[in-house]
Length: 217
Length: 215
Image (cartoon, rainbow over all chains, first blue to last red; front, top):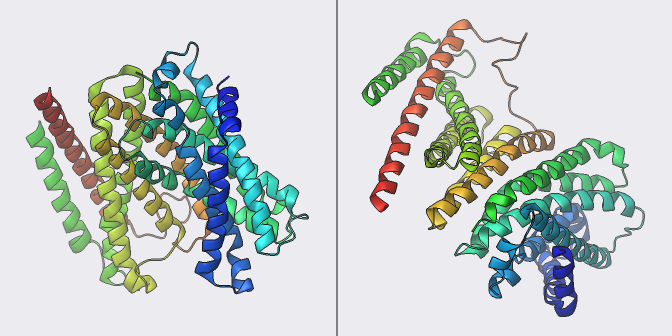
């Protein structure tokens, strides 16, 4: 139900999606300006840049998870909602996941376009890595967004809490993406995929179990 | 009781210094620089111990809502961050003459520095929430997330790269370390553990007094 409501709001307003799309485009420009037009150097740093783009747009998108509730004074509505609070978490997580995956797909296409990449061959492998990494990002992000929504200086606190926790996810996804883009099979990065899967399970489980305590009056 | 603990800690630290500088031999290849290990290894042990205590105290707080558990988690995180800092600083001082660089993105260096920023974030979160009860709840959730993240950090960084010498202690079959050095390490680790408990109880007491003063 929460997913439905958030998706409806997002479909009607499209504010987050539009802004994030534009932000992703700007990131691409900035990366190219910062590194110069040398194609070889850009290619070497591509997996890192790609995930930097995902994480930065994720930070902005995830940080807004509970903005609608806070600005429209619906926080109490969430708190008073009958049933298990973890359902709210799962709903918000699903909404975030969908939003991030859309943004990432768009970013990926833009990267392919600007960096003159042929992504078609690597796409299935890439999709697995991106999906696993995004679940880990969104799971912790949704939990922390709920925590920081009620705190002053939340725009500052949210990334400061999220980035260190996501460090292993970033390491794993960048390494796995690098291998996939070089045309290696998923089997060669099985250990990274297992780590990501473990991270997904741990983060979602901890999120579901502790969300009750975050959403207390 | 507090006096006794303080006295014991002091005695332990003095004994540790004597072991490190008097009893333990000068290492053949590294020279006196190696002696920094007697500070480095006990510090990292205490840091991990402290973060483990944060996890346990956080869970206890969420289940029981005992404010004492919350204060224990808070105090333990502070002491843990302090000793993580000491670990990084001593490692850096040792790394310069031994590896030729202050800093390198070696596996365990990276792990420890990620833990450092993770728990710094934890303390930051605590500092930013005025409402005591809410701060305690959120910090407990973060304390649990961070603790479960430690193994993930460990393995990801390990596969990412490794340069650090393999652990020389607690590894069956490969104990190339003379007994004297092991005893010196043990005495220092025990002394640092006492120091940790001493810091922890003092800090938790200060936090309790602060809470009482506010109430």
